[in-house]
Image (cartoon, helix red, strand yellow):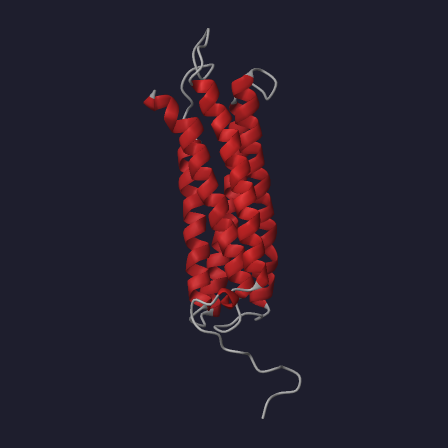
Length: 201
């Protein structure tokens, strides 16, 4: 006998397109469009890099890795923490989910703080030159996406604490996690573009 309040869940074949929640497909669409935006912006940087310049490129010489490298490691670790939590709830681990989300959120917030310190340490601004314009635009867009990611993780943490998720109900966790991993992956491309390629040229 089925529960009249909670309708019986229809089991679909593994690999069926309908096995993902609608929100999962929505976040994939958002990631594709936002990924294209970052690709275009970074293409602009590479286009300017191959042009002839009167002075050094980047202006001011090679960028320092003192803050950016540890910050990159911090963001990667935050992604690992969120993945750890997501994997835990798929096995019914409530505490593992909470721990992963809280650590991921804390490391993401730390990334924002360190990134703001790096912005303040720059001797150029968004209006100084083409490089400064691209640097602050791209890293600023990434920072905005990261803040959105933090705003996504925050209610997930609250709902996890209230016991909303379990091994059979965790679609929101998977959707939030995939966005967080996207933000992480985008930063790796940004880090490579602005901080590593100057050392390779």
